[in-house]
Image: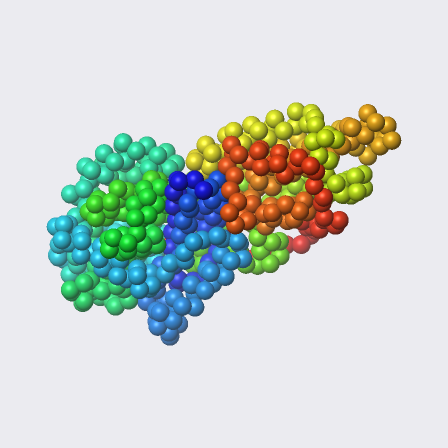
Length: 528
Ligand code: MSP
């Protein structure tokens, strides 16, 4: 195990409604990177969960005639079910109604107040409940609509505690400027910089006009603003309270490496308000905040309220989890928006997964069973790879860097190029035409089968973070332990050694390899 730490988080999801593929997307991004880092031997912590307080949840519960806690109890299960169905390997699923989180929020509030960063005053202005955001007069759209979601805002006038943002404006600007990788991608970083340069206003962090939230310690008429509460989940999740009590020395080591994955709509909370809350607590801001784009349907942001949400569960039931993971990560470059299109999903499934990857594995297994009795030749009987493994070595060389850039679409593109090179190599060298009784042709045959098998092992390694189930199935065929077997780790510098060891004396494969990606009949359509 490396002595390096890696901490990755998703946004915590509102429990006003069941999840759609936009929510699956944030979580799959974080899962992929967490799996990769674990595979490389990092001490990894992956946090996800649900955001359960605030006016939006209270209103939704009212409209259903249940309490907010009942609503949260039932909807958070839907997120857990989805995450289970798409193989999300979180280390903790946090709920903002968890006791340790409530305590952590109150501790943080008191600490900021003790540092002189909180004061009581009055807020008079606009509030967007769907976004849970205070809207300044100057940014309101026509008809007093929210500039973010376009829905009507409401006028609020109430006593509130403020957090001093202005005080930290300069410190934040310096921090963003000195840490070019703090906000990704670059064009988003520039947006945040110009927002901060326009000047910050202090942030209202409590409400008195409803009840569903964490009480302000010492002034229980106020509940803490839901975003102040929610952002602190990133501290609760890795044991801030225990750390303050001298019981968790790992806390700063993890937090220093924190990578927050967020949608572009919530970047400002993470790149402006959150670092300032941390400055006030005396904690260095996270390593990075990465903003991804939106999944659209027919050009509009997918959401339950727009009535265009694609249900991930029905997709998974029909096509499996890995195809969805593959599609979401390969189809758009992180940071940009993408249109979810059912026909395109099926097209990509059939061509990349069924034809290219699925076929490669099943034809190789079939050839091994036919020509060598299911034995992958060892080094003593086959040793050349006709330059094929060089392509794979090039992918490995760039892999760490690509992951650091969240270049998922590029990594997958490289892997599938390699798969196609391998398919072409098999087609061109046509092992089925070789005569096994001729020693020279036999040598050639064994070399092809060994090269294909080793390459498939590398492919299984490379796809593991993206498609863990498929990787597991491939390893099963080759009777090799999966990449998430307890205690196993191999980074890009050590995987070739692992591979050499495994394939040295040859391997015996399973007699029957199931078809991993049955071809989809294109007349069939995706249910929304
Ligand atoms: N609860 C807040 C986050 C608090 S984090 C401390 C919240 N919740 S949310 O449920 O509304 O959204 C959660 C995430 O899902 C956000 O990152 C948002 O960008 C993402 N998505 C919601 N709809 C989306 C798409 N249509 N496409 C991609 N991601 C989208 O905001």
